[in-house]
Image (tube, rainbow, N blue to C red; front, top):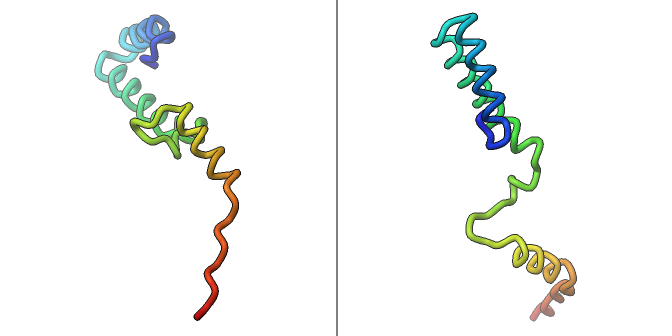
Length: 79
């Protein structure tokens, strides 16, 4: 819930949960939701499965395009 745009709304929600159920319960619920969100994010964004640190997106797209357009290597004749 602590994403950049949702942080103000999340703090209100955690505050209400804290008042209604107690601070420790609010922390536990927020932590559980963060863990569930972390586990669901790669399922929602399939591109994260192939993401490599340090490779700019434009260069990676060009590399994939060049690989897809390259002809298949021919097999060497058997001796």
